[in-house]
Length: 294
Image (cartoon, rainbow, N blue to C red; front, side, top):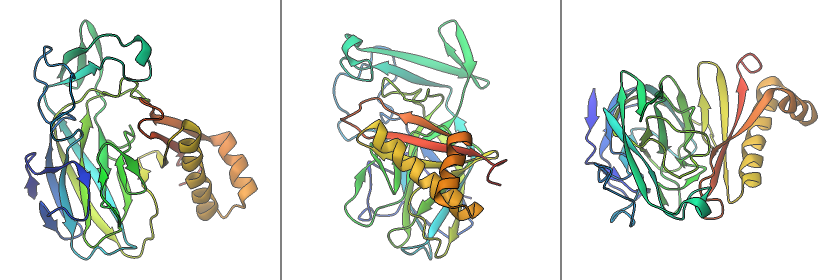
């Protein structure tokens, strides 16, 4: 099994990047990932006073998949996410969903012991997830701080161990990268910082020729999840819902009206990230049970 160290990272998903690794379809890869600040936050004295000198949300990669061509799709199976022993949470003065009340900088180093988060005297289960995963777009590169049709910074809690992420291929080789792992994150990521943590991620990558995937689609053991992003919550939710209604129509053979009504009864439209509406795109998801859509 091949391995990519966390020193081989990019801060954008871009066809111009040299590959960190080339693989054949079906191969497993182990990727070491930095936290969202590239390991620069090591104590509670380290505050988010200034931008990172290179960028945030480093993605390990890119990986080129032999035989991948525009119009194909990747199925990225998340087999394991092994978390470091601690990560960090933080507040940045004047930022986040409650920016007007965030009057001070603050950082907390948060241990994770045997899968349990230790936040002061409080204990709750860790929930490993991948914040950034995507492929290189056909045009200009996109910062790993942003989401789009290529994937990117979706901050979707369903992208965890056991999930499969289906991604479009827009350039030869696909240019797959991932990073920004969280040990836990509430929907919305309202401070714009989840429990940021270094990790080791094991994936298996399959190539689906001619799949014609337009946007990321996530499959878990129990659900199908479509994704949306936009400058407003309404725009992002509408996009996730549009992707879901078309999925239901295609898979269940329903007309639009029936699929639309089914969604109103059985599909959840949820917020992924809304930490800085108007400054960073909002990301959303629409979730349907496999009891409805096998």
